[in-house]
Image (cartoon, rainbow, N blue to C red; front, top):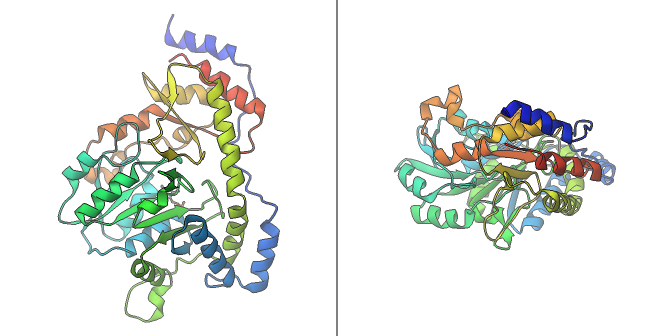
Length: 375
Ligand SMILES: *Cc1c(COP(=O)(O)O)cnc(C)c1O
């Protein structure tokens, strides 16, 4: 029997259902309360509501300095201000991250240097890191994807011994944990996005955090025109008061999100018993946030699995973005450096939604569809 006949036989085994929506409804009962407070106390990026938002994030993570900014991309651009470099210097990045992480450094005249990731993980591979590090390396950026932690603890030790600052782009890893701590604690600087599609949303927005007051002062100045003193370049990257108000409401809901997503993941994993797929291994001591369930094929081409799910109305970020090593893009082709682990990882994976709007019927349909996959 040919592969396509087999697929169509299987397709008949899963009863059809309406397409599952992957957009989370970002409404929270406290939204109006905080928005009213913003309207009454000021809407600029220096209004008290923004300070309250930064304070709440700081308390949540136990990290001293939090700076709310206008996007996740702004967060990366601002984090670069927290480290020292000159035009033409190098920044090490994994090729498996979104292009959004790399564009801000290219915009400043920094050169991305691609470093492979570990097998079956989005964290940088220490052996490859030793190959690509150079006297011009000014920062290492780690980008764990879809809520799954990397070995940022080990990377922190390596970065320190090299004397190079470690920036964590945690746009996907709000409240992801490692060794009983927040993943964010393992970076010199951690950046987050609160874009509508991320774990916690303010529509557009982001924030940057550090325990280092000198880095914080430089980053903060950069987000407000270099404090307008005409000595240093800066732009306006501040988050507005309305977004900060919504952020406060979303922080109230973050534990509920964690809980529901963990429950949905457990529900699926209890029912999935297809030996052709598995959950992406979670590093020892790591706790995911449930932003998505990452499933990996154990053999064959993972894009066939993505297509199988899509044909049954189950959306995937990998279908939407066709995630590939970044050096495959025209803009980044000059920095091409084949990274086998990253290439194979991206080709083996799919995301499965875990968001709170999924019904039991949706989850049962997802499990049945995964189990019907025959390679
Ligand atoms: C989404 C994302 C960004 C960009 O965030 P925006 O808020 O869309 O600017 C940066 N890095 C990573 C890893 C992301 O996923």
